[in-house]
Image (cartoon, rainbow, N blue to C red):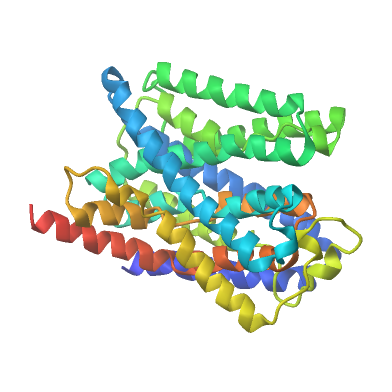
Length: 393
């Protein structure tokens, strides 16, 4: 309980800092942001490498995972669809309901609700000593497939916004090759796995993804850049390492410290939403969402609560599957998928790049903030349901 509360405290500190530091640092904030984002992605890579190390599947029964992928895909799709419909019919005037421009903007912006935050979720469940439970092992598969589905679906969404570009095809190819390589070489490489080595691997993974991005950006510009997030490469690297269980006190302390830092940096990565008039920041653009007038803060909060409820209702999809398990286990599995964070925030940053904004952007940001604040409660809820299930077995 104390460790989970500590995660939430670091997260809240990061959220507060994300609102105060831009004005406090002034012109130096851009350099600070580069450094904090670098640390964030290295920490995320560290967490995902460890998740990949513990990821075990029976390759002789690979067809059994088609059901898991379907469940994960639907678990990502339902919150997305619910929020897209909500944004269209509740936030936009009826004149836009038949507008393809409005639909594609909201389909992109609402995608923030789809991905489960694998890094946050695995970190907190591990802190509660749930690694050996069915829930943890199943949620490993679903959360990774959930994020993979989000990454893949962002490609056609971006094609809708900017048209077909060969760089997006390259991203799909890289994702496919990584998955094939990880599957074929799972557990094949017996290399160092102490915390120092994992930190080094994490930095190398991030450096490679950044080099690909920077080189492609210099050659083809920002719009033509190839950007591979560290999530999947780090996970695949963990998959191909032959897992050695290292459980010394120093390993536990370093792993916990990196997890605390990660939570702080996730909060710090949130865009500024206090004291910002988004309609001014996008003046002169032509997006439909960005042209909508600002709402009173009371109405904004009302929409944030409803969007949060809708998105989490969509995440309850796994309850209707895995009928050989108890209802409390299936419910715990679904509630574990409530957690959102870095990937959803990344989608909002992508939306900002297309000049999407207005009330829908503010509601999206605040929904992630609310969900992050509730993460500790969600995870403790998962723990209690898990304990209930095991007591009745």
